Length: 262
Length: 290
Image 1 (cartoon, rainbow over the protein chains, first blue to last red):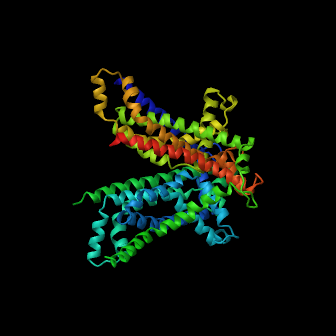
Image 2: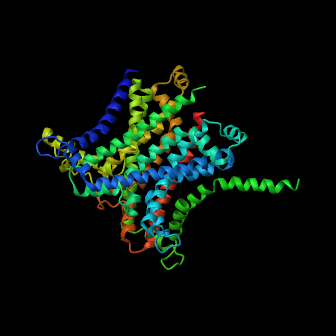
Image 3: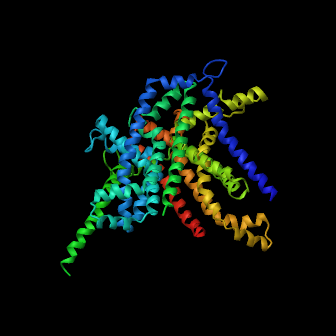
């Protein structure tokens, strides 16, 4: 018994070392910009860079569009499949998991060939079209996470009874969807939204190949040209990921609290 | 009775219309683009059916790209699986205080999503030529890491970097599986006189191996398709499949667009196979989790 406890602590020690040394190294490196002393100069340099502000703003905007349109696609679909087409569930679930199987770079390669400016649907022919295509690619990437979190939340409510009750009270479809279903799966919607945000904000492949001025390609550019700023950016990116995951935990805890109410 | 059937039909139509937006989306942005590449791999640029593109994959440059990719993915998934298993075992069965379990699981959620370009930066700042660990070893122990032939921009460096998101993923998936090992099984084997080693060899691991192997396959596919970290770490200098494909999309470096499709097809086949095996093993694993 003592032996196993020793090995358990050993495993944790190895894990903690492996995970914390790079974070520590990055943080320490990000403070080294001023010669001979630690300073926050690298962070100052990052935040005052106009390109940082622009690309970060652009990626936030793309993330918000991805979340809004993704949820408008995923929630009604998950609802409808549970209510009317339970026989289609395995198929829909399979489709939502496909983005985990097909690498992002392959998907965007397909877009570039299929929707180029000389095709029937020339998405990449204009800036607006390319932005739309970027949002669609992000929805595709986050589909597995969004669908699963919404579907899990929907499992805990009785979709059929809610719908029938609303119908008896004379509610139309939009009312049922937006006033009954959405609020009841809010915890799933929010945790799906935060994980989508974490994925989209620093995404590189799609944005780089679609030539959009997003945060991911900017990160890569800074990494190739500067010394200390990349570390500062890595710390910022880690903080954003941490924040998103923290919010998911908060939301799911809150969701459990509201469910346990009689 | 005959008047009822059109009504049922209308209802069926409405039922199917309900998931039409999803179907259209999936077709437009997932299925058709992929099929376009897959079919393109079997045609020449002027539209004739051919197997030449597939045959051309077996040229030395492309083969070596696949080989390095497979090696990196294999090494990082096996390494990730072993360390991840050790960590999951420690928090579930190691008798550690519960705050360690909660802390590790939360951290794993974050770290498994911390990939891409920033991850490359973190490892450059740590194990690069002026990184924290490199400098520390040099100044305190007089040990020059880079004189041993180590290079972060190599197979080994990429493997170590990938493990940063592989290990947490393993911990997240394996912890529930280890939770599912019933105490009664352990007690029963102990009463029958089994040693710890015998318990693991004859009870624990046979139950866990589908989860273990399945998750390793998931990690393999995960690493195989990743590009951002590798690209930010090594630029275009490391010849792995995603980077080759990236260069091909950017500027037709293979001088044959349809060979690019074949390259993509190869990636889909490899990640697809490992995922199918994963799903199959997952179904086997779930037998014991009822």
